[in-house]
Amino acid sequence: MPKDLEAVPPLPASVRELRLEIEEFNTEYIAVLDACRVEEWPRFFTDDAFYIITGRENDDANLRVGLVYCEGIGMMRDRALAIAKSMMFAPRYLQHHVNNVRILSVAGDGTIAAQANYVLYQTLVDEKTTIQQVGRYYDRFVRRDGRLLLKERRCVYDSLIIDTAVIYPV
Amino acid sequence: MPKDLEAVPPLPASVRELRLEIEEFNTEYIAVLDACRVEEWPRFFTDDAFYIITGRENDDANLRVGLVYCEGIGMMRDRALAIAKSMMFAPRYLQHHVNNVRILSVAGDGTIAAQANYVLYQTLVDEKTTIQQVGRYYDRFVRRDGRLLLKERRCVYDSLIIDTAVIYPV
Amino acid sequence: MPKDLEAVPPLPASVRELRLEIEEFNTEYIAVLDACRVEEWPRFFTDDAFYIITGRENDDANLRVGLVYCEGIGMMRDRALAIAKSMMFAPRYLQHHVNNVRILSVAGDGTIAAQANYVLYQTLVDEKTTIQQVGRYYDRFVRRDGRLLLKERRCVYDSLIIDTAVIYPV
Image (cartoon, rainbow over all chains, first blue to last red; front, side, top):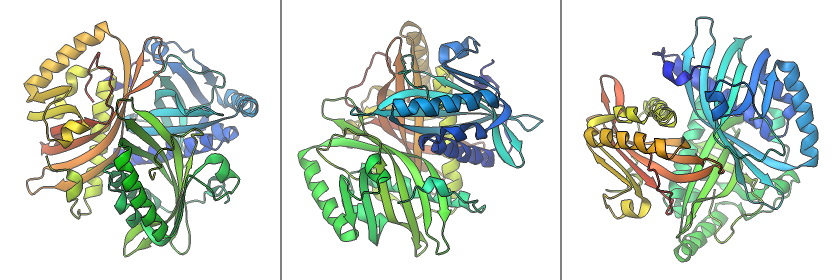
């Protein structure tokens, strides 16, 4: 997993449009999650998508292990259902903020490599709002029927100590 | 108060321009607040605007009660003056960050429904910076003389425990 | 150091393009920092640039003292090397988020005055992620060979109590 940061090529003028489109994608993505509509979460991915939530150390070491690991939309659907159930028993408010989308490259086949920074805030009953995790998306987007879909989203968090009672998607 | 999230229609291409314009509106709005120019805060609203800061539970239950509740610009002006005074006695630094603006709909009469995520950071004398509240704007914008104005801003916070010594606008 | 906020002139339509360009500049700037490529940090500045990290009180009082103070790219390069070394002995993860870019003015000679809000999150080994500082950039950009460069970046933090073990650039 080479660090995308090392390979930023000069980008065409259309890259700004792409950046804005990905911002809108991410905003829609987190709005669905924050509205607790986690069952809809898989619709942002291709059928063969790869999704992981993992720590920086694992990612740096190219280890594909993490708090959440999904290969293919089937695993995501299973995961979404499990989370929807567990949220009933451990209610909390979650809010994602996503910033600083950055286009890394656009491949010949149209695959877009991008990153973005995220924060996930969590509020438990009778507790103050805390930072559940801070991290960065490393994404691969493809276009299907004119719309962007995620072929890969690696969510790489800095936070080494995470409340893992419920692992909600980021 | 139906959840706006349920009713996202397909939007025309001009929606991106609108999104960028609202981002600029929000950035100007928070810059005024963070510069402690709270007396200017009402100028972002229509004369008949509705403004509330309330918790998610109240908003979900369609209850129009909150930490701050203003119907009309007169109540906002009163509020602004009261806050300006109280800030003299309880000095603190405040900084708002607003992210992820999302256009929900544009009505036939031009009213724009939008949302955005916010964080309000607070720093008291000799204390660390803390998250005062994390929340979401649910807005209705109208256009007057070419400029956007808020006809409604519902600030719905996740944070259940809030330092309410001074309730500054978000 | 007059407060930029007081002097927001009406801006031409091209200001949005400028805002988006500065967003991209800032995103690139923090990506380099967050990837621990601090040696590259000076390349975002002009040779004669001024850089400071200081508290709101100092900045309000027009005092040019701060946690970090650099006049000219030579001082920045020295600083970058020193930081690169100290990071080896005090490892930590850092992540910057930058929001709400605001163009304040464009001078006749093309110098752009702008501001933006930032948060720096810090994660130490075996500790939770914390807010290292919350602040605002006050920037002067100039254009060289078509690219933006910082002629001045004043990083003015709200946070009065900062872990100063390592002062990493913001």
